[in-house]
Length: 505
Image 1 (cartoon, rainbow, N blue to C red):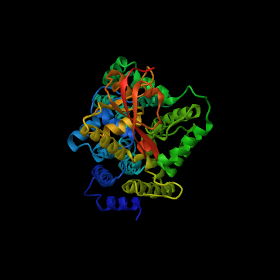
Image 2 (cartoon, one colour; image 1 turned 90 degrees about the vertical axis):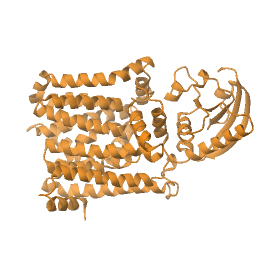
Image 3 (cartoon, rainbow, N blue to C red; image 1 turned 45 degrees about the vertical axis):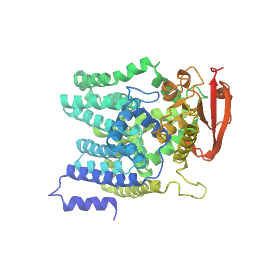
Image 4 (cartoon, one colour; image 1 turned 180 degrees about the vertical axis):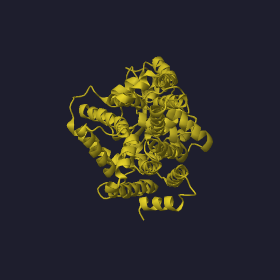
């Protein structure tokens, strides 16, 4: 039985007993429960970005080198209740995606009908990108929930300006900005909507939108103050991440990004989005329905900006993820029409199959050996064994009466992984900073030169890096062995004992 037939049967059998909103909440909760089981069986280790976010959650602040602070606060809340296991660190991803699915229902039901809302919620929950994101913790997860609620509040304001909707819009915008600066796309998309829907510009003459923006500004102010005190580190990192200083014009990167979107949204849904956008932009007259214009305004500008970014330099597949809230609702509303229903059925068949694979496969991490690929989860394995090796060396030194004063790393990936998988050991983990300006949060907050602990156990994947070793008068090889640390399979990791620090050259 197809997903559509299953849910239709539920709707028919319970039309008098269960309201659509309760049914939507129940289905989102059921999918969330299934993903909790999959997460519990997940055998992958934390990716180094996840380990980094966990490390941030141990030192709560209003900002961090590469991201705003919300992700750290969320992990801190989860681990304070659940513990520090991989399951507990990732737990908010499942819960927040389930909440986002229900918010998508409310958005689609507000713009169209409860029927569209139900199918849109299911479509969102089974997007390949959401299925993958449910198994890891990332800044996209709270961003998507904040974006969906903000768009719902904006849609309510367009219908009936009310202070409750303005407050909801402002708070969700503020939370979204504290999750990821990509929330700023919302203002751009709203501006695009007012351009294509002049009949709604009267809302700009009311105070509601401006109060909402003021609330968001107040909520992001602590992060702006943190950046001011740290030389605008997050903004500098964001600009550097775009890599506009490299040679321009990379059409192959733009094509790679577009191709990746068929994987993020699913081939049928993304193909349908392109067809709807082309038909709408080509026609101009008669104009598209107002709901279509709203949803296109909150999806196409984001895709366009990131495609241009990819053309000029590069873009990761998830950089346009906020576009898929509006895009999913729009495409489902069109594919529910009788003449397009087969396409929606095909989409659910493909996306549900992919979602099941993405939920089950991580349980076999470390035991897969696919032809021509090997273990697809190799990048997320090996850090626990590396940290165990470090602990064995530290324990041996303590037993010999010559304890190390610190563990030193020269890579963010290693530092993050050693902090998480080496938690519990009292030896501090420090970062080596080669340049005057820090390159990551650990170089900003754990700069070895600021403490000069000695002797140190230097963990590196570079054979005898002189930029580090030349700063010490005494260098002793302790151990060299292969480890797939931070996703690099069988790269030799070198353990060196460094002492008699004499300063960087």
